[in-house]
Length: 106
Image 1 (cartoon, one colour):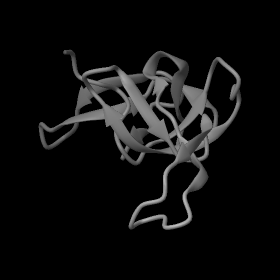
Image 2 (tube, rainbow, N blue to C red; image 1 turned 180 degrees about the vertical axis):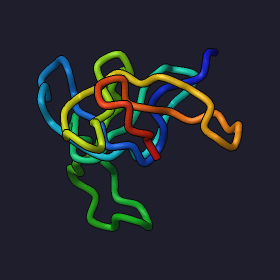
Image 3 (cartoon, one colour; image 1 turned 180 degrees about the horizontal axis):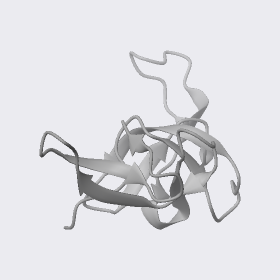
């Protein structure tokens, strides 16, 4: 698989679907599926049986994976969605940068 432009810890915005316009931090990337789990986005209700962790059982709410194509990285300078590019910095290290402002993405 090619180098992913979205990484764990990035702030992203949802471009399509029920949660369009929502912002959140990436908690996990699922490389094999091409999806990501974003904090506070795509919340689903899941029924659970009683177990050691949840002795009562019942319904829990958790984040479900969302496709990477529906996410865009938020520009660190403007706070708007941007495309991501790669370039080499002065040290010769490959870094990600915002195509909108040219700002390096940490």
